[in-house]
Length: 181
Image 1 (cartoon, rainbow, N blue to C red):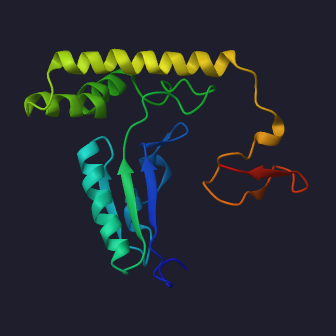
Image 2 (cartoon, helix red, strand yellow):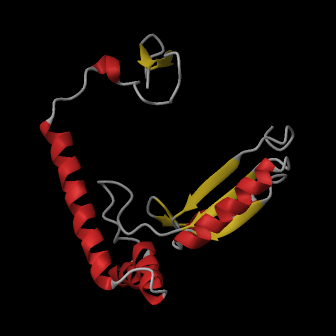
């Protein structure tokens, strides 16, 4: 429908190389997910490179805005940890594999290196940013865990930015929540 109506949609497939505990090579006959849209063109993007993602997103947005319809972006990335609490993430891949990806392709490390090498920031400045970010995260976590849980009727708040408020169906179709911003 999106292709038929030329809807300006960007569909994103985050490919972290594993579906639960199975590598994509063992789970799919074709791992070229960006080609699976039939009538929707696709891009394969290095999802570990923030600048690649930015440029691909600019291209995709321009494509959609030009009236050509939807586009699919497959962001190839990597999951450092298991898929869930029941998945330690080391039964189907080695610790060495994880360390190699982390040491060579970590998005934050790659961006920091580019910034330092391009004289956009010094190592010391980036360390200061790291300290500030860690403090902000710690403060936010403390705030979230110290405060009371919000009342159930506020579950739908801030889902969308809209005016006026509207009803959002809960897990049970008979329970309605108000979405207000």
